[in-house]
Image (cartoon, rainbow, N blue to C red):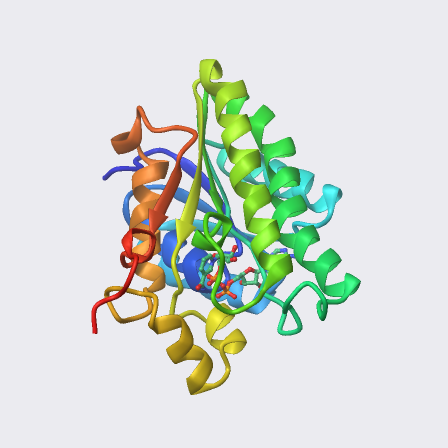
Length: 257
Ligand SMILES: NC(=O)c1ccc[n+]([C@@H]2O[C@H](COP(=O)([O-])OP(=O)(O)OC[C@H]3O[C@@H](n4cnc5c(N)ncnc54)[C@H](O)[C@@H]3O)[C@@H](O)[C@H]2O)c1
């Protein structure tokens, strides 16, 4: 049990990476706070954990709200007594996100608010709680597109993930001596709802697959296992990294046929 006696809060845990991580963390002994705007999905995550014999609690939280972020951290401490792991994972990819000329200010603001400000607010309220617990771990979900240009234009999303990486790096340095580790997790393209809704034609999917040496989209469970590594003591000397899990994209100049 790699997370025995730990309390973990995961945002965006009603679906995709967040849900897969919630189930995995709970199976490794963590008590999990499932935070999301999707109440129905969140309750399903909690029920799945409980059916498997784990402990979890749902809190309705919109990560763009300072008050909600404060509330979700308080929920973790009041329900389970402490917070050891904060996984800021909630994120969106707006279907109107495109190139810089065509992307609207609304899409930019929506994306930056959830993906970048949401992580800022999670850390703002989470770090004092981690400190109260004597230290802890933050994992922030970024993306490989924060590190290299995307083949399909999505300018707001790309910028938001660059912000998550830069923010995570600075937090790692500032809080290193408080026994708080902070890493940005950078998944490649995954077969989750978020991306499959965005790449809504076979042509768009193929355009993305061309760049993945493994020739397939990743699964949420594969990212959850990386998140578990970063959240557990297995990564006790790992902080300030951009932890890339991308099927080989970053390594490729030309992908094999
Ligand atoms: N799917 C991919 O290919 C991919 C690749 C790289 C990074 N990511 C990132 O991984 C993270 C999780 O994505 P996913 O693929 O599991 O997507 P998903 O759509 O399956 O899950 C995202 C979750 O975030 C929640 N959410 C959205 N806005 C919220 C808000 N304002 N407050 C609280 N919760 C909110 C949604 O309700 C949903 O449950 C995101 O940050 C995403 O950008 C995804």
